[in-house]
Image 1 (tube, rainbow, N blue to C red):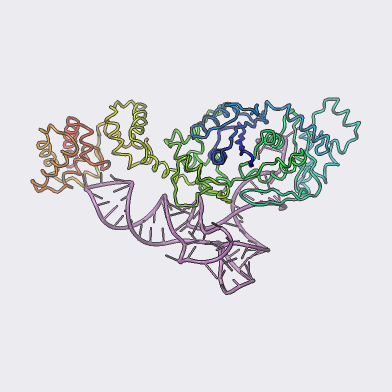
Image 2: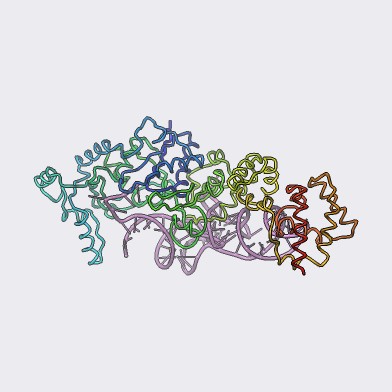
Length: 511
RNA sequence: GCUCGGUUCGUCUAAGUGGUUAGGAUAGCAGACUUUCAAUCUGCUGAUGCGGGUUCGAUUCCCGUACCGAGUACCA
């Protein structure tokens, strides 16, 4: 009988969650669902100085937008409550005392200034200072000082931290589901602070205690945690819960599209793609960072794109619904190496979903965009525009942009095109065309197509000499869907008016 | 610097435990289609970091080396 899978996503609310964080959450979610387990949201806010207003709410709503939901967490509750570390400080105290009593941790009274000074001294000698078995006896802590001194310092309310006592030389093995066994000698580890002078634990202690208490079975997190994983392994041992230690999986990082380093919020603005799921406004600087949602990405496309950045199904399929991802996901198929983010491919994913979407659903979204631009359209017309454009664009916003000419008559026609495509008889031909279509009662694209083509043939006219100038008059440039569809969308009156304007414009330009 | 991790087309990746013309996608290029621009279709370019082994045979295993990344806080 296997244990129920329980995984967690444990962000720190120090700002907006970027796509790397969303991917970590997604992999946890997929793994939980695949194994019919539970997914927990825990907020790691032990660093009170770095808290950012609105960040927690942002994390929850962004993940919800992406379709990532939780079974337990700060916002939904659960039997392992509370799920916010700042509300669990009493719990950590109990465990820190357990470590202290067992001799696995000790009090340290060195001030940050003193430590800085020691670090500087080491640097002058071109050495790196590490608080460990070699140096701890020369520093001010409960191992180097006498019992009386320690007692006195504590009674005088001297600020202190609690540090882990790393064994001098012991091999620690981290078993990683993605990377295999990672072996490290404890002599390389330092006596990390577990409990800060402000009365709250650091990440390392809180994380291990909470994962243990919340019965987490698999820790799936970013690769940046791999170097501290040996400490976590040691902590499980020191807390006598090694047998309950979760399995680890350290995810490869998402890297910048160009150059070196991991993806950061600056890269997005620099290269013109979002790095955040939703738009984020910094509460202090008021700076706005763009989001996938506002940029017009479908959440399904966004999730699909992220899922394949570092994982693949082993088949050649690239488009997956969430249910399919859940069905196929496995930690074994996660890559080891970091992936450079490709903004172009994320557009392609959106295009794929745009084509699959229900036309009515798309039309509703398009109507919203029109409304924002104060453009009044009927649903029927918007739907026609939608169906005409959806195979030509990556985003709905592009439909709105590219169909703007339908609502505003072009004032200037592209003069370069006039010079290249219009001849002295062009205006005459357009006038003839007006005469031909002026009396039409039927203004359907199909009818116009047939009738105008027949007229061209009977007058022995080539399509290019009439249709190109016609498009120019209607659109202002040589772009867009089929001319007959444009005519229908514009309606008879507007079409004729535009052609007449066009004739005048061309006449003036050619003279 | 030290420690850990990584290295297949420009980019994302496939090739369970050594034998493929190293496959797909994306991007790029070309052609076709089209009255335009896209889209689409067809084709093309393009990769196992390097050096040694082991082996009949190495992308795959071993060693070295280079490069990339992460960590090295009373931050997570």
